Amino acid sequence: MTIVCEIAAPFVANSAVEDTEVVWPLRSHTASCLKCQARQAAMAKTGRHLKAMATESNPAPRDLEWKVMSSLEGDLAVSRSWAKPVTLTAAAVSMVAAILIWRLRPRPGA
Amino acid sequence: MGNHFEPSPVEQAREQELIARAQGGDRAAFAALVREHSDMVYTLARRLVGDPHLAADVSQEALIRAWKALPGFRGDAQLSTWLHRITVNAAWTQKKKASRHQGASLDEVGELAMPIDADHPEVAGEILELRGKLRDALDSLPEAQRQIVVMKDIYGWSHAEISESVGISVTAAKVRLHRARARLARILEDEG
Image 1 (cartoon, rainbow over the protein chains, first blue to last red):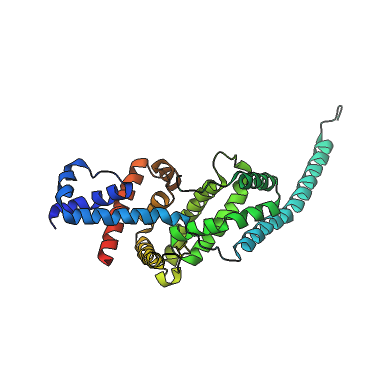
Image 2 (cartoon, one colour):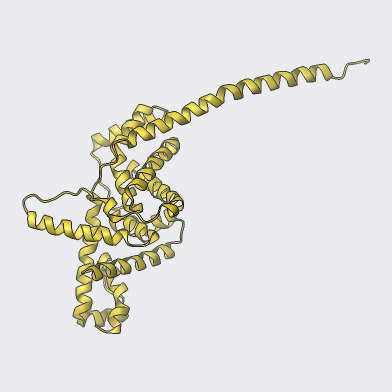
């Protein structure tokens, strides 16, 4: 192994996963270096395994659905508990404002 | 995103109906969608954050966000793709909180289920061993690097999709991926 192998290593790894050629300044080295070729082959295999992992599935915890749905119910309950007082308060404030405006309105001849 | 499975037309029609009902506020329809996609969301979350407990929190957060955002879902992408993005974003949010929850033991992570070729047990054994090493190597990558490898090399996201999702430039995403793969190769080589 030479220092060029170490410089080439990240480029070899990337080209192997992407199934592309190594960048040109390192191409002639990797073409003749058994160590780099072995690394390239190993990383190409890793790349294939990574792609295959997309088909793997792990069962979600059994209570996930329950937790999600009860959290949504909780949000709804909170929004419901807020909705009524807010509506009543807004109605009361509007009524008081209307009375005040009526009482304080300028009267002709007053 | 290259690696997603295409649902059959019947499944698609059923899913679209469920989406439309859920968009109208039907919780039972949303629960059915959660059942349908929770394994996928959880698997992605596990890969992104490693720790199974944290992954469960990420999944829960992602599905709650999905419910809230569902009225805005217009069906330009598949629901699974859309959920992937939400899960990645939820994982990033959890990551900030997880600094105090760091260092989940690899023993805790457990094994992911995978299809095994029953006719060729020796090959299946080799695959299991390789995948186990690969998962350990992925887990030992720094979180930002692991996420980018998961998105690109497992789920086939484009650099543009990654950059948008992670909030970095396309060039930065490419550089991070380059470094992550180099590091992954080194870890695997050291493990022999």
